[in-house]
Amino acid sequence: MPIIRILGIDPGSRKAGVGIIDVKGNRIRHVHHQVIHCGTGEFTTRLGILFKELSKTIAVYQPSCAAIEDVFVSKNVSSALKLGQARGALIAACCHANLEIDTYTPTAIKQTTVGHGRADKAQVQHMIKVLLNPPLPLAEDAADALAVCICHAHHAPLKKRLKNSV
Image 1 (spheres, rainbow, N blue to C red):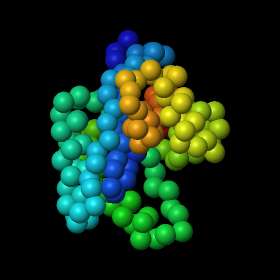
Image 2 (cartoon, helix red, strand yellow):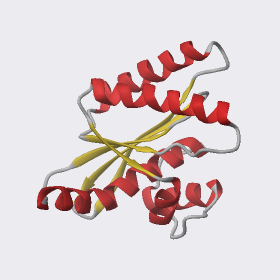
Image 3 (cartoon, rainbow, N blue to C red):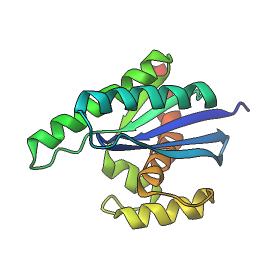
Image 4 (cartoon, rainbow, N blue to C red):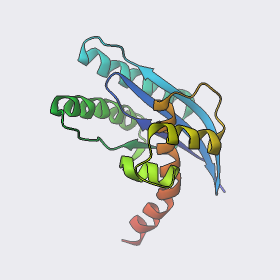
């Protein structure tokens, strides 16, 4: 059975979580996690940092595929637009590396990882520590990215079977 290396991304315009796991059958192993810090400078500069830093990580770890969290639209439209653009820069880095990308809602990610879709960040972080035993420290954004990886590991086989049956 081949090893599938999954890149998970928790997008943000000031910082983005990145996680990488290896999956072989029903076994999941932590490979890497990080937070890309963009600072508070010009927005376009921050987008460039997201693209460049994720591209470097992809080059080093050579993932098989990628998964990213869908944008959560809050009451602040300006923040949602910036988050969408940051997400676009991260998706562009994945596309530049020819990675197939799947998206998951925050509810689906929490449901898969914690067992209920309304889990808070601390619960997600705790479950990632239990499931993957990653090296510490484990920032919330990196834990969220690893949760995206786990969600994809659980959902990708079904998505693939459905896609192939059409």
